[in-house]
Image (tube, rainbow, N blue to C red; front, side):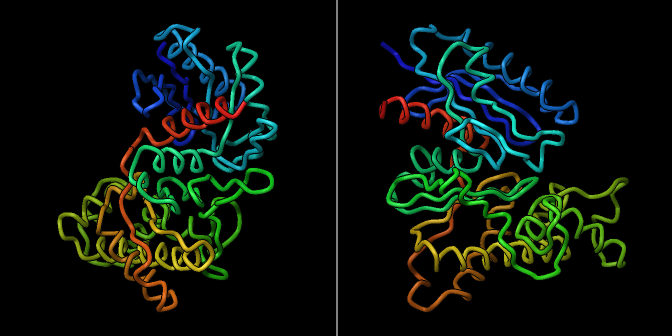
Length: 317
């Protein structure tokens, strides 16, 4: 009998639901805009509708359960999403129970970046190593840590909030309200902010020719065309990322960093400065103990990781 998991990914501007096989194949997927401004009730209803649509694509008796990748902080043991900065109006939402009641099957909840790390480790760019750190750079910066092939979740399931590592005291304001965090220095919005500042300073860049404020995607496109200001902005972001990696190297001694998210589409334009900064800031003994590679699963990392959570949790029962 074929076995499947229904995987739901709540991270980013879109919500997705997918039917995923035990080997990580995404058999069927549906998506919709998150529209977080409508509040938790509307978003949860959207998740339930998408999960039901995905569930209709396979025999219900073949479905092991439902996995949910949600933006943190989350408490996996209680199945609760707790005051996520990117979902306005959310307090403590018992998301796992709400979906379980609506769908009539077991639901497991995890942090979206943690589960993307699990997906990349089991089926993506980290599948051949035992110790791995995943970093996603998009509207925010998140992460997940694999130690001896196991996902590190921490006492309350809130480990690996890599984006909120403080790097520069009194630095730029982060989405969480504090200053100088990695997310305020290397995320998509921070790239867009720095591009606007460069234009205001009169720096010579093709970004000034746009008829709207530049986005992170615009910065990456300009850098690929050889724009020196855009290249410098990506190099700065990469250097901040590399310094954060150096801290993580000393703490966890990973074999590999896997970097995903929309900003990582810049490839070596951001990853090479990160590699250089990471190796510059670690002790000499660590310099050649890790590599930095792009993620392999793309947009599927969250749903594949959520499915892996289901299969592994069900097997442990």
